[in-house]
Amino acid sequence: MVVNSAQTIKEITRENLQAVLKNTTAQMMLPSECSDLLMEEYMGDTEDPQTLQIQFTEMMGDFMFVIPALQVAHFQCFHAPVYFYEFQHQLTFFKQVRPPHMKADHGDEVPFVFGSLFWGVKFDLTEEEELLNKRMMKYWANYARHGNPNSEGLPYWPMLDHDEQYLQLNINPAVGQALKARRLQFWTKTLPQKIQELKRSQNMHKEL
Image 1 (cartoon, rainbow, N blue to C red):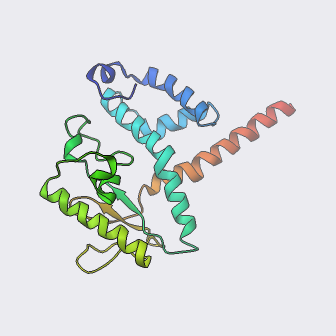
Image 2: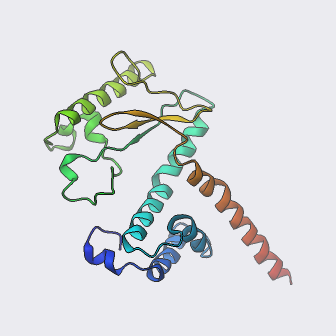
């Protein structure tokens, strides 16, 4: 339902997406009532099929990858230096097969870190992508050697601390702050609180 095809996009409505969310929350081991909260948080009141598809994809990405990574990073900050990144560049090779709104997918940074031959495939990189490739290999090598990715000639990569700074890895790397702070609050505070309230309400009804 979330694959990139015009036919699929046309078929998405709020009604059938709500049905999908019911199944999705069950797979997430969340109460079925949480589907309404997820719908409100990610879909808002939009009726646009393409927007619904984009937001559903973002929701699944947050649940499976982004929020768990942020939770681990924030916990680890109390024990050791943490350098957090978000890879944002869409490889030129993928532009013909991916929707324009998708910046990067899970694992897209791997050939930039280890070189495209790591995948057994030779990608035709642009000059800008070659530079990004060299920068990322240098960052990772620096961190492996010294525990710090920074060195002369590289855009500065700050530690993730109380300022919650991280590096946006792109053709032009930039420092970002508080990545998905609102969504992190939703998944770690708002949603668990709503689940607890729901459980208390259900227990009260059982007692009655």
